[in-house]
Length: 165
Image 1 (spheres, one colour):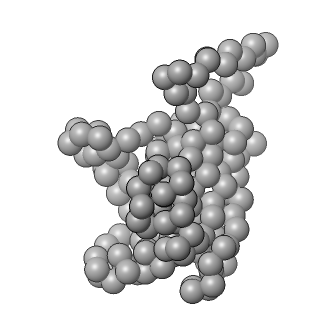
Image 2 (cartoon, rainbow, N blue to C red; image 1 turned 180 degrees about the vertical axis):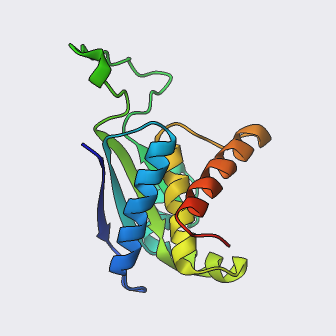
């Protein structure tokens, strides 16, 4: 099995090009490979600022739009019970297989950021997607060290896929 990308479009400000989906699928494979993940599923939703604003407000308590949100399906919360799986053949077990989670990208915000940074919209969408994927598998950027690690991983995957600045 491989990493799978399921996507949908809930905005009408930008056309979602087939080439973007091909590139995002490539990014998913490259990022997964770099992290030793061989299977799993990521759900990607393209939205606009209004849609992501509502999600950011409702789920994070932040009353403004953002560029990308990630909702991990396999995240352990402090108050949650650990789920223990019994695996007969441990050589085939991948603790992060199955549905990894959801990534929501505001294409409207990505367009603005691509103009600010002086690179293509495709590069910005790719960056946000890899950023969201890394969050799904447990990376964060709460301090300088973890931010530097995440940034290096993102840039390595984007460079490998030819999405440089």
